[in-house]
Length: 308
Image (cartoon, rainbow, N blue to C red):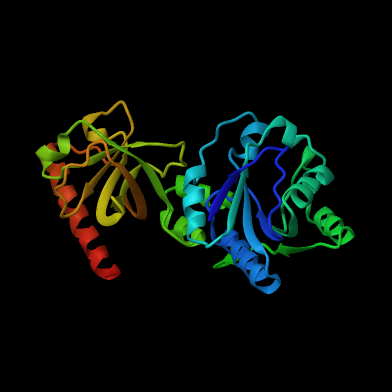
């Protein structure tokens, strides 16, 4: 997979290309359906495959916000490597791009990048005032003797799949439902930093995670998780929140990794959320907290056996 950072003056003479368009926050099952069609067109027509990404989310610029997201741009690139795409084209979404007419945007794709076929979801909107839509794409591509595929919305267990719905599930602690719609386990990434170091005294040393991106955050509580260290996954359980027993003033993300004793301070790790175990609870004593942690461990080890 080759990654090309573009601007509106970019003029690459690539081979004939089929491209998928979208914000792709999460690369959920619906997005994966687009990628599947992208690869089908590639094989059928003999084109090269590409995904066109904005390096920043379009809504952040349009609505002047910095909203939390399911994935960082770097996460998207890593995910795309598993889809066997030939090219990734990325460009910063700017006022200039936002104000392009639908024709100007499609001219850039078809003339500058030699796009011969476009794959998009049925609700795709683009260009100035979101005037561009799938009807415009179909008309434009037909006029140019080019082609396109419009993908219907995908449902999973009678739930319409969207990034908005997945974010809602993550924030409300319905992590298993979120994972169902994603088609994989939601995860966050960051660096292990020094925390309060209370876990050691409780018999459950933890890795304190400082996240590297403004990820959508799960509802406060304790979760059955998997921690990825140096490319290897270890089961764990993790606490997200303010830890009411110790009246923490700062929300933390702390993970106890089972059967693991390596020093990982300063390492970049990934934390995958598998199941929500319980709410955070204010215990009357440290002894009560330890007893609950033992119960959490027993529950997690039962879940590990069911997975294996």
